[in-house]
Length: 334
Image 1 (cartoon, rainbow, N blue to C red):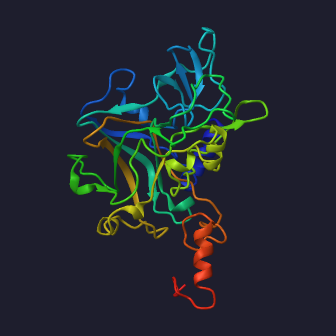
Image 2 (cartoon, helix red, strand yellow; image 1 turned 120 degrees about the horizontal axis):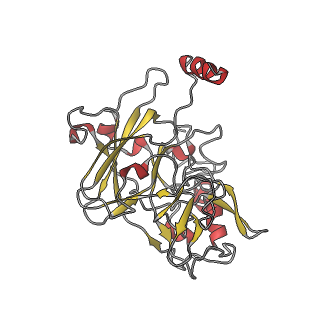
């Protein structure tokens, strides 16, 4: 037997195998999907799109960015994409990148592990849903656009839809869509909205796409579309702070009574889910690309000086400090 296989078996028996960070199973899919190439529910599995093959009108590869959302076919890998004009390129063939959820459309995906309500996750976000939203730009996006020059629209406008997101720890074996097992978010965002996927940093020196960004790190959920208004794309990417984008969800955003229904993991003491239901919101068809379990980090959740816990250090914090100088009037029990 191959020694690598023996080592892998030993690690797995010891509970040290690393689970997939992305949804790995389609449990159920039904309803209306889009036409090809937007009709494959399995497009939701694995990493979000990295490279998009634009066959109209460029016949070229585009990086999936916050101004050029996933569509058509392409590649999940952040490696250099294969040459679409080279028939001898051994790289994997292109795949469908997103699925469109039309009326009645719903997909249930599962993780191969428990997705924990983890306070050490950045901003407390536990789950990231990737769609194909994009910011509107003040110029045309081409395969060789300089993202240090191209700007987001002056209003921070977006091309986006809404996808309903629900979570569950267990499923009804006879009916995975049984509403008694699913919990929705009482506040918080929709899928296929803020924040558009952006898989690479921008190399301003060489004017090309640079290092891959982290699809397991959420964007600051307190940012708004207007915060990106009139920025260069490079400046907008900087606001992602190393994240590859996607819409973040914190399990604590469930209704309190639903959150209390989630089971508690005996090893960590955290509540958890393992399944995500993505469905048509009843008004507009939306797209889904991937679903990720956020990776925890060993850094403070709030920056120093962030008195009101909005993940920003700004004049609001100074105002609270000034009003409570010597005599506390705010959050005095802390």
